[in-house]
Image (tube, rainbow, N blue to C red; front, side):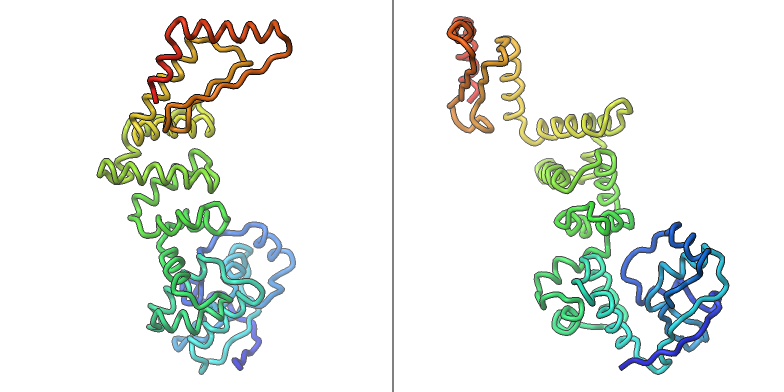
Amino acid sequence: MLETLFDTIDTVQIDGDDRLFCLRPLEADPALAASIAVIGLTQPLRLQARPDGLYRVVSGFHRLQAAHAAGLNSVPALIFDAAAETLEIFKWRLAEIAHSNPLPPLQVSHAIARLESGWSQSREDIIRTFFPLMRLAPSPKLYALYAPLHQLSLSLQRLLMQDALSLEIAVALAQRPASDQHCFHGVIQCLRLGKNRQREFWLLLTDLERIEKRPLTELMDKNPLAAILAEAVLTPTQKSDQLKSALMHLRYPTYSAAVDRYEKILRRAKLPPGIQLRPAPYFASDQFHLELSFRSARELRRRLRVLETMLEQGLIDEMTGLA
């Protein structure tokens, strides 16, 4: 059982840059700082005394940051016994965070990095001993999935913490250079992509990387891709539609050309709303689907005359020739 001693500590004695026990990026919290300025710090920090006479934070990084912002010169703290092993304190910290729910993936990744670099824990020891403390199954697959996430840029880590970044893409980006991370973060922010749309654009872009043998940053600098993102008069939705269309033309040039020709045929046919003509998905077969809607025999005859005109003008032959 780890013992603590309650005391009031001057903030200058606390090394806020010692992040041994910190498991996520720190962000300013003005609301917390405003509250602390009025009522003080009601929940003590957890600190560990260091041999140099200073203290490192065990838990309460955001509270310390807010206390500084509120102008507090001292804070209440529970101090771990100086003889306590840091690894034992870290185990306590993991159990504290995961007392009711499994640790989120990003915090798991930071924990793995701390255990490997700070205490030279092996992959097997982390999975067997520390994953249960984090309320995780002792699974090598989870280790492989979560371990790289701490290598994400701070901006992407924030998105992941906010559940605004697909975990699948976060794992892929964490193993990419900073330039690629910055590039795709810019796409997400500019287009305001939800997680499903992120996957859609990531798949197109990584496919193009492979086909063109060009890195992501070069692809996104390519016109018209960069021009679409920079267009000031377009809404995020309009930019998304245009960028997807441009990527589809690059990724599937034959299919995109067929779509363009098909749309031109439909414009020439001037179909009324009551006639719907659809090709097979991706023009994978020569079958087309026709749907008619009408409210009277007279209206049906008008619909049929439109189709007869298309036949006479050779538009149906052009359409079926696309498949």
